[in-house]
Each structure stands twice: as C-alpha cells, then as structure tokens.
Amino acid sequence: MSTREQKLTYLTAAGRFDICSPGECLQLLPVTVETRRSSQASEILPVPLDTLRASQEALGGLEDPNGRTVIAPYISYNRRTGGCGRMLKMLLNGTCSYDCAYCPVRTRREPVSFSPGEFADTFLRLWRDGLVEGLFLSSGIPRDVDYVMHDLVETGEILRRRGYDGYLHLKILPGATRADIHDAARVADRISINLETTSPDRLGGIAGVKDYRQDILKRQSWVAEEKPGGHTTQFVVGAADETDAEILSCLADQYRRVRPSRVYFSAFHALPGTPLAPHPDTPAWRARRWYQADYLLRDYGITADELRAALDEEGFFADRDPKAVLAAGNAPVNVNLAPRRDLLRVPGIGPKAADRILSLRRVRPFTGPADLARAGIRGKGGGRHLVFGGRDTIQTKLFP
Image (cartoon, rainbow, N blue to C red; front, side, top):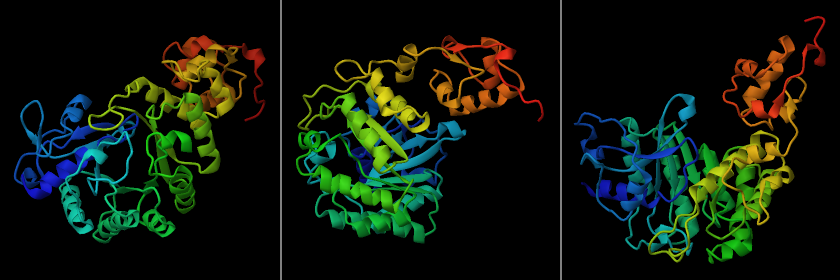
C-alpha cells in the first residue's frame, strides 16, 4: 500500500465518528486506489458498523470477511431516489489540539494530513474512476483555525478549477473568520458547523476550549447568512447528559433563528482513550426518535410546544415514534373533513399522502379503511386514528 493510500485510509477512519442520517450507511471501497485501474471492480459491499469500529485504530488496509483489501469508507446516501450515491467522508488533518471529550481524533498524535493539492489529486482520481461521487471534507485542528480553514477552502477551489462539478460539503470550524465562511459558501454545495450540544454549560462539560456563543453560535449565524438554505448542524446526543427537553428547546430556536436545511443526530458512543470512555453509550434508538421528532417540526407543522407532550416527566422520549405518542392522546380525525394540518398528525400520513387525500376526496369521499390505499396509505396505523363521514358530510363542487 502506497503512502498516499495509507493516509487516505487513516484520515477516512479518523472521520468515521461523525453521523450518517437515516437512509445513509457507511460502506467500504473494496479495492485499493492503486489496483483499481487494473482489476475487475467488485460490488460495493456494506460493512457492519462493529467491523468499522473494531478497525478504527488500523492504519493500513482493512479487510472484509472475504479477505479483500479495502481502502476507505464512504457514505452511501439518497436510497429513496432510486440510486446509491458514494460520498467520500474524511478529514484533511488527522490530529487536533482541541479537547472535545467524545472525539477520537484528539487521541491521535501521528501528524497525518493531506495538503490541498495532494488531496485534490487523490480525490479527482477516485472520482474520475467512478469510485466516489461526492465529498464531505472536514478536518482536525492541529494548529491555528484560520490556517486549517484556508486549506479546506483551497481544496474546494482546486477541485472546482480542475473540473469537479459534484457534491461538495465543507465543514466550518469553530472560530472560523467571516471571510473563510464566505469563501466556503461560494465553493461548496453545503456547509455546516456542529452545535454538538444544547448550551454553553453543556458544552463546557465536554469541550472546554470551544466558546459556545462566540465560536459556534456567532459563526452559525454567519453560515446562515452566507448559505441560506444550504447549511446543516449536528448534535452528539447524550454526550453532555442533556435531556430531550433541552434538545427540543435548542432545536426550536435553530429553526426560528438560522433555519438549517437539516439537523443531524449522532448517538454518543464511548471510545477508548477519550475522557468519556467510561460514559454509558446513548442507545441508538434515541437518535432515531430525534430524527422522527425533527421531521415533525420541519415538515409536518407540529410545534415544539405540541411535541413536548410526547416527553416523559424527566424530559425524555420513550422508545416509541413521537407521532404515535401524540396521536394516542388526540381525537380521531375525519379523513373527509380534516384540514391538511390535522391529517399530518395521523400516523402513516406524510405530506405527500395528505395532499393525495385532499385531492382524492374532492372527487369521491373515503368510505372506509380500504379506501386509504387510494392515497398510498399502507398498514393499520392510520386507520386507527381516522373516522369516515358519509357523502353528505362533505361539501362537493357543483361545477368543475
């Protein structure tokens, strides 16, 4: 394995602690960069997360169960679009001087990094060979933040100048200058800065170097101004022992103040060698519940005040879909009379299904659960929360 391959393997492995959202999964490239051109390409195989974690300390090539050498993980995404994109996710620098207690990069002392030009060469080769289709580029901060941000932006600029027109996501580092954020927004399709947790006090318990208000919230407001509708953020759920009630308040503030296009939730996983190694892992289901709750806030018109009714007395979600919890306390909805807002509160009915119901009931009313299939609603979940009025209960148009 060449030095460049070793660095690519190391820096993608170092970046694996970050989050994939529902519909995304980590996979591995099954052949090395050097042998890709001269060998028959194998199928891209999913690799269990436990295998990835077990290999996190490996610096050389990894092996799948069939003994084939692999070079690096990537994110497979957008399965709902009918395709499976391949987005390489990695760090430009594999060491960090910051003290985030949950992060494995702080435990790495080997000065492994790519220069902007060197990484651009490597990535463009992978892209032109059809091995990857997009790039998520972040970095550890081994020295001055401005120096590292300059390298991230320069990498993006080199890629664009050399013909790369695919998806590019650049991470904004805490404390970045407004000028670097402006340049990152200009060159990238998406930019992001991670909140990690909910407040200055919570962050102080897990990352003493970062200033929550100045390094993160202030920079996030710049990110929102430079890339409206094209920025995201992330919570590491459970690392700082915050409650779901705290996350909910913070999330509602996010959508009101900076309007991120997406929010990601990573269930905290304790890693050996970090200060939080003895801390209990956050159950994976808790992050899943947060993705469901986030969809309700972002796409379903449910308010934070309404969603608080799904929390228990201690301020946490149970391991149950928050939408189902809320629906259990609501009166049934008349599918022939209810406005879109109320239809969206029924389990099994999303924005598209609600719109289909509104369209179909103008032509012919729904008379029973069997009619729900006309609107693409499957299963019994929605039917339990719906009632069906007769033809005389709805107003029909006399003229088209």
